[in-house]
Length: 81
Length: 147
Image 1: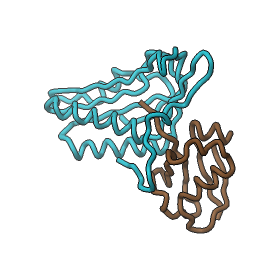
Image 2: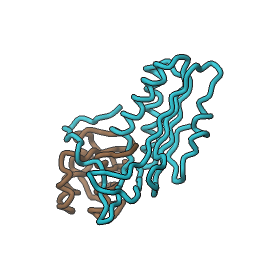
Image 3: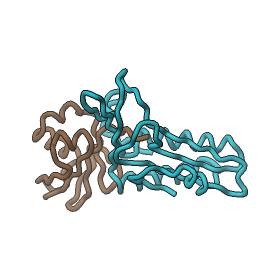
């Protein structure tokens, strides 16, 4: 299935794009988004273990199963305030 | 009033939004941009948000605060875009009958915001710029850190 992944802040700059399209197996776990991202952009490995995934605007664990048309986002460590 | 905006925050407007004649206290937190970070002089800051998620997560943390403390009204406004030094980047206001609840809820809200709300700060120095957040944060496992 094709999914769209939104990138922000440092990760967005490392990938040089704010939106990516990925081809993943149906019901792939969220962790595959991070694996695919780090394969395509090795610089992002600096953030390994520190990236969270959000699906449909909620944080999910890495075992969360993705659906087609999910709104997926990679969330680097936040620093608002 | 819960929002992420790309212009300067009107503090008096946020304050007015929580006024309530049954409140005996209003706690107002203002986060402002600082001129020194990592021992270096900051020129200005830039904030970025995942807007729809930030909005949703802020609304959820406000509901959680209403569940935990007896408070009357809560407002949170976070600014994004370029912010000059010394300006407000976030304003939180909480009204309650007595001061303790307002203080406690306000601290919970800013602490939760800084941990979970998808907003990022970039500090611009004379010799470059850095996204804040990686240093000082803890790696996490497969469980979501939410709420």
